[in-house]
Each structure stands twice: as structure tokens, then as C-alpha cells.
Length: 384
Image 1 (tube, rainbow, N blue to C red):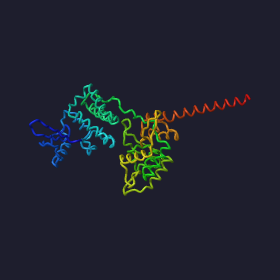
Image 2 (image 1 turned 60 degrees about the vertical axis):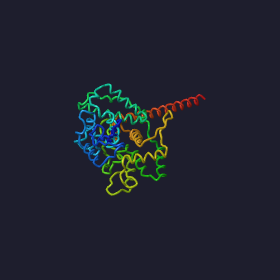
Image 3 (image 1 turned 30 degrees about the horizontal axis):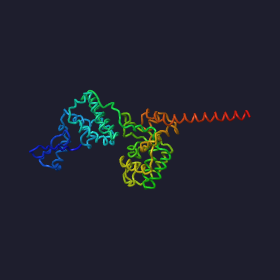
Image 4 (image 1 turned 180 degrees about the vertical axis):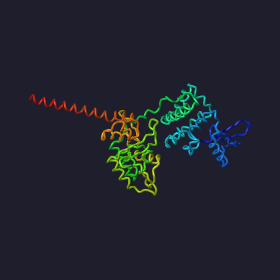
């Protein structure tokens, strides 16, 4: 949360700066000088005290609802006294990514009375806010999502009667990545480029993702003690359809081969994660993601749709590859595959429809056409 500086310049009077701990927060200091003041040690102490004091927020403003949902200080994210159960239930990466949007929401509406959200006309206000950020459509959509989750928190607790942001459509049209998977050629290109750039540890992440279907945060946090005699059992860090599902990944021959190789990697003392970086330390999610994407970009690994549009393939898209393998090579049901991947069965069903059922239909048609062609040739030969 950013400190707020308010400048007052009136004719015939000195320029005055008002320093607030945060937007909607208490006044920390008033300074008369032409240039923006620099924060002093005393200012930082006062700001810290204001952040720690919930009473510093006007209880009639929307900012007070934000504070009830999400603590001002990220260090309090897991503090039951300062963070709501809904906020604590979010994955750390989600909380980190949402904080910037929360600041934008607070800057926009934090000082207004909470009751403004009972007016259905606020739908148009939220749409206008979304459209103002249309140059970054994915970010604009996330902002609306964060606002909707916040308003739902307020509605369930009786602070407001409706959630005006609930059904606002997205601007970004590239969110459906169901048809994007990593092919064997993509994996080979990535491995070749990683070796060329002397980053072989990134191949480990790709190989592990391909045989487990784990998300990035689950890949970097997977430890050896989560690998049992017959399966990997891990509670997903991210929620799927509101539930934090438990992934139970069977130890297939492919997975056992990858794990045996990863056990040979040098590790720093006390490190128990399956994946490690070049220093033998655990990866962070952002660290792995950034390094992985640089290799992907260098290898020019993209998906080209039927209209010729190019879209970069993400590490997350390897999950679709793994799901397809479960449905084809291992012939799992939708529910079984969902249990393995900590996905919803509906998500698996969509993958099956695109990659498995459609492929089987095409193969069956090809076989029928080939059989009819053989029959025609046989009939022609018999007549001769």
C-alpha cells in the first residue's frame, strides 16, 4: 500500500504537503515547502503504526471492508486476527499478484462509503474502470475478478446486498488455452536450446511437469517426502473451482525414470525439494517461470491457431499434454484423471473432447475410408 502525498497550492499562500499513511488513512505530517518532502524515520514509524492499527481506517468507508478482507501488511497474510479466512485460503502467489489490484481498487473507491456498492448503477462504474485499462486486457480482467471476490466477501457478511462485479465479461479473449499443449517436437527444441545456453536445470522442470502435470508452484514446492512407494500425494497450492484438491499421481515408469535422474542433482545442505537450481537451492515460482520463459522464447516455441495467430506456449500448458497421456496411454476416466491432476472432472472432460474423442473419431473415419477403398479395389479386380 502506497503512502499518499497531497499537494495544496493556493495563491498567496505557501505550498503545503499533506502526508497520509495510505489513501484513506491518517495524516502523518504536514509540510510547507515547494518540493515533495522526503519521508523521515519518524514518518516511517508513524506509517507502520497506522498500518498495524485497524482503527486508523474510517469504518464507514470501503477501505475498512478491504482491511477486513486483506491486511495492509503482507507479513500479516497468515495472521488469523488480521486476515480473513478467505484471504488466508488463497495461494501465496495469488495473494502476491492480487495486491497491486487491491491498491488500485482502494485508490479508486476506498474513501467512499461502503453503501455505494448497493447501487446497481455501480456496474457501469466498474465496466468503465475495466475499459480504462483495456490496453492491458488480462490485467484489467484480473482487477475485476479481485473486486468481485472482495465484494462477495462483503455481501456474505452483510455489509452490502449485491455483488455488482460478479458477471462482468472479460476483455481478454485468449484465456482459453485448452487446445494448447506441448508436442514432442516442442520439448526437443526446448531441451536443445537449454543445453546450448547451459541451463540444463530448466529441462528438469519441463520433464517433471510432463510426467506429473503439476502447476508451477506445486513443481517448485514438491519435496522428496511427498513421494510414496506407489504415488506422489500433494495438496495443490492453488484452488480449482473453489476447492484445494489433493493430487495423487501414480508412479508410472516415465515418472520413476525422471525422479531417479533428479535424485542425482547436487543439493545444498537441508534442501529437500525435488527441483533445484544451479546452486542446489529450491526454485521460487517466479524464478523458475522467468528462466523457463527465456529458454522458450529463445527456442521460439509457439502455438499457431487455425487463423495463423501465434501464441507463446507456457509451462502451464504442459499440464494438457500430461492429461492427454492419462486419457490415451493409461485410459483413465475423467474422474480418475481429475484426481491425479487435482483438476475438476469438467476440465478433464473438455480436454478429452478436444484431444481424445475428436482424434478417435478422425481415426475411425480414416479406417472406414481405407476399408471402403480396399473393398472397391477388390471388387474391380474380381470383375476383371
